[in-house]
Amino acid sequence: MTSSPDIVCLGEPLIEFNRPRGGDGRTWLQGFGGDSQNVAIAAARQGASTGYLTSVGQDWMGDAFLDLWKSEGVDASRVTRHPMAPTGVSFVTHSAAGHKFDYLRKNSAASLMTPKTLAADYIASARVFHLSAIGQAISDSARETCDAAIDAAHKAGVKVSYDTNLRLRLWELDVAREVIDATIARCDIALPSLDDSRQLTGLTEPEAIATYYLGLGVPLVALKMGAEGSLIATRERQTRIAPHEIEAVDATGAGDTFDGAFLTRLLAGDAPETAARYANVAAALSTTGYGAVTPMPRAADVLSVLERDA
Image (cartoon, rainbow, N blue to C red):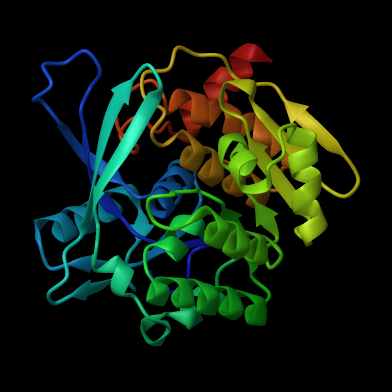
């Protein structure tokens, strides 16, 4: 691929080990995770051209990611490989309270990214640049790289999409709130989740949370509310989008699937509310199996549900 894809994502990929609910407690399913790379794959499965910026280790995990991105049609031509640092790892377990993440990611290859290694020209030729708060939280140099990437997008007139994914194991809430609010003020599309936003803003009602984020300066908010669907908010109106009801098995990558599907449909020309209806279905379908990537639906799967329910 010689030119930048429509959607370029930046962040940390994580080899995923997922322990199924009701198993023997010793069996783990190996898969792939990392919120920003999940978005790239989700968008690619909906028909968008996508690319990923990151660094992986010179290990079997880095090899596996490169093979995955090739098979999924995600351009990895600007991915770098660190000569010594490893690729990060995540472990997903399940309980009545939901899914839980544990990590082996300290000093991962992605956390050692710096602005000097950033492919700013790649971002500048995209239509949308996507990042998340996790990419900012994994290290100071990664945060500086995310800031530089936003600068590159702004300079080129590329829209910036941002997920507030909150991981309090990575940073203190006060620091997260300050960085996330400042980043939302620099974005074109905010993709927060309801649970994270309640912690970050201290607000409870979805409409109040959306109003808060709009007040920071972002023109479009897509608030993800899980089983309650989503809320689309602009300065003109706020609209709740009904969920697609389904029996969920594992919601590990549901929010990321929403992001990728939503951005894909926006670029295809859908109104935000229409894009959110599509993304709600995509996110719901992604919860029907274990792991972040494996159960992500393709466009035909989503369209089939939308046509059936029309």
